[in-house]
Amino acid sequence: MIGGTGRLRRVMPVGAWISVTVLALLLAAALLAPWISPDDPLAQDLTRKLQGPSADHLLGTDRFGRDVLSRLIWGGRNAFGGVAICIGVAVAIGVPWGTIAGFWPRYAGTVLMRIADTMIAFPLLVLAIAITGSLGVGLVTSMVAVGLVLAPNTAQLTRAGVLAVREQDFVASARIAGVWTPILLVRHVLPTALRPVVIQMTIYTGLTFVIQGALAFLGLGPQRPTPSWGSDLNDAYSQILSAPLLILPPGLLLGVVVLCVYRLGDSLRDRMSSDLSPGDRKENDVVVA
Image (cartoon, rainbow, N blue to C red):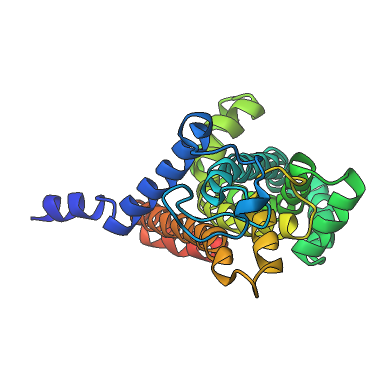
């Protein structure tokens, strides 16, 4: 009975499976956009502008007569690609940053964490806009900017995990055995220390979708006429009086994606927490919070 209960606890909840399925379908649609898109997302036909859903245009057309469904499918490429860039930058900078600060906390850690505290003091979106303005507008630059803004938070989480693990007996034993420090960090410290970071990355993923949409809405993301959920939402908002339903497809799609990412993150957190001892689980909850 106990074994059966343990296996049941490891089964992914239905909501998580639904979230994975929805995200996988959207990602597949974005990757297969050249083959499944019903129309050219850039093709304009002013004689059909602001039309409602029909057999020719399942989600209608925008103010330039472009097919809304095609633009959403192609916009998924920028959405998922931009999030990948952002999370990659945050992890590539934040994990080494926090690892050094946590493993050598006295001098390097103090300096690095003061830098992180200074960056975190600024509002996330405001700092992202400032960095984007300095680097230049565009998908890559805006997502690199967001990744740079999220890196200090990632560093703090990594540092907290490393500080907890570096005092464990198996780390002390490896040091006494003369294990090379980089190998010690990669093979013994980081696999345990990065658990809170993995969970937090799912939260950052959902947050990045929102920030990316906001930056594109403000004109700091992919430049028109490139398909983008945020810029399409801006176009729909400008026509809200003449075509109020036009705002629903990009807005609902963005909301569904964020909801699925957060639901998957909750499932991942519960799964990892169930694998920890009660003491480790409490400590992990504190770090993630």
